[in-house]
Length: 259
Ligand SMILES: [Zn+2]
Image (cartoon, rainbow, N blue to C red):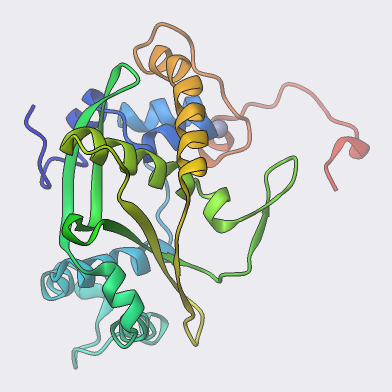
């Protein structure tokens, strides 16, 4: 298939190509990732998801179309309902910041694909600016200071949500597609969903890219075997999908509950 912006998120594209979000899905829970691919499971999308879509539509310059496609966000007078009212603040906070706007400058939603570690990948870059030597991805998060327990240690939101993996894969695929020797500077522009939104532009380094790519290379063979049905997916037992499929087989002792 010829990949473009319209079919990028289609089931066919997801079967044919690996993507960073699919890769992260498989690392989180193979059973859920596979069920999602097969269309047997659709993850719950909270309002948090909406804020991301809203600022992305703004960045792409299609906010008017987004508003028409999502009339439920608006009152009859055309203003946002109270619970969504700060979505416009997120945009304002970025629009009035020179550095954030410079980072977001460029062509929007650029689709690229190429082979990486023996399998085709697809990426979609929020803001692509090769003439200035950079690309950027736009994220909305709850707040900048959140820390997350990964089972071994605490991580910041960039590490926990795998944004390092995203920057690494995007940098490498862009490099392979264009045939350049060096990486573009990959940036993440973050705006928070707090009542008074905060913002930050985050940069990375080549060591991080090399480390993350080595992780992808190591994890990919198993993921591809599960995806192609050669081996059975493992269930994490904790995610929404696993909870929805859970059948009780034993009584557990109260001390076995995690505190
Ligand atoms: Zn699971």
